[in-house]
Image (cartoon, rainbow, N blue to C red; front, side, top):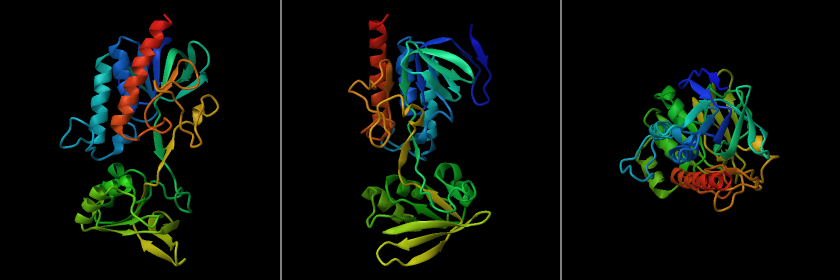
Length: 321
């Protein structure tokens, strides 16, 4: 018997009791896997607890994905992938997936309180932004503290902000923010800028920002909203307060693997270990995208891993038919 669930953010999905493949995560890796698997006529369910597109969906513009010489908005690319996967028959469900038994055959999951069986699994849960864990960060989240320029940039029109992290993400997102804000101060813990030169040049052309290198963020100040950022010079030890209406934080990524940390082999940083075919340490389970150990964390690389995983899933199911 099928289970019918009504969704608030997507069309009605009729959940089957058994799928050839369940994919956890609807970022570029998860959606690419769904395109390949459903096109191969595998019954495919994609489960995503947030929104399709993953972390890439919050990127204002992706310029290095093949086929888009003028770039493409991350959200637009994610929506196109979703549409393509659904056109081939993949089901995409906004829900939390809980793995009950990953070693059984079929695999057992709980989704929306219901048990769903899967002959195979692909884990494509990606990463989330790391926190800097300083006073004020958690307390002022959503009240001036943000991790998404595309989401929150328009709220800071003509305001002064601080961006934490001078890597590619920090500088690229600061360029986007410069369209709204009056001033951006990028605070970097290391003594040098980590971003690519082309991004630094673009940021400097905005004439709205500057870098504060070799400084540590000590606290985010404010009561009901952000009023400033307290930093310390790592060489002199001098502390100062940078007045700011907002703080955007880009200091790295954390793999979304807590739900499989005792079930799959992970590396020292909690990324999933795989072989060349993206198979994990558990038979019938693959991983793809940014959640994979030693992955090149780019959309095109995630899609490549996802295609490899989905094709190998098809071969696996054919061999076990």
